[in-house]
Length: 359
Ligand SMILES: [Zn+2]
Image 1 (cartoon, rainbow, N blue to C red):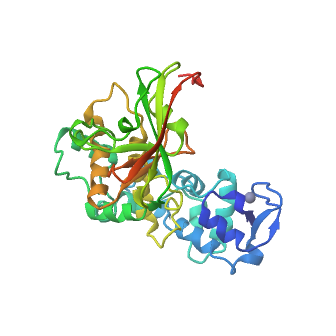
Image 2: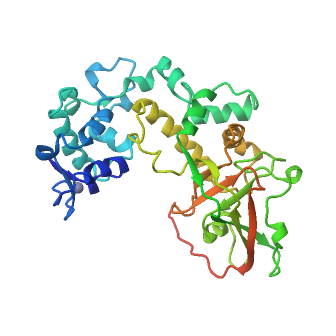
């Protein structure tokens, strides 16, 4: 079987193929002059097989799943590999070819994975979940409801020891001197002065997705255009955009990082990784939701809880992808004094690039 680096999205797998250092045409995805892996030649020269087998190996064929295993969670191996992970760039047919070759040539992988539906038993094992999932047998939505309607300060559905471990794996450093931006809607063309562009003082700070009411937090983005979208500026609005520079390296919980997004990045338990990565994605999705006038402060509680915990652990902020621009990130900075406003300018929004999405 021959496949190539272009068949994959996962960086660790790409590297394991590129390290073989030979190029050719890929029969799986059709790419030409690309880094290829040839199972006949390269089997022992790279950890490619081992990496993929460590993921395929957590699935069991239907005959080995309990009666209690939900039917709607059973899928073919290629469907699971496509839906559960961000490993492959090729579609189901390509995944099937690669998985088939790996399973047939491996002594440890069960060939029944290729003919029966498959599943991961541990995902439905309460004991396993209690020990390995941030929210135990519950989901992020259960936790949200609990905080909102039952108990705000002493949450039951969360394993803080595990959360701290999982957050530790996402950490990244944003270097001193990095420029970040904040925009504010202004009443007229005079906008705001530099002194008004920082975070509001503690007691008057309103609630946001990463801070409770009364706790100051500075929301920044790495692109000017993103800050304007984040505040939902409309056509002909005036905005002031300020540039801030970090006065020191900041250590952040980085929910946007693609390196931690690989199950091969560290020697992790793949099932534990899969479960908690899903929780992190949900947390990031809620953090990145733009504020709306229809929101109640209660909507912000769950992400505030997670951010407060990151702050308590000593991190400087939380970094997440912007919903408005997948190529740029936002940063909620807890200590608002570790950056300084270096520049500000007033703008008028001239046109909005409205894209219509049928509903
Ligand atoms: Zn390919």
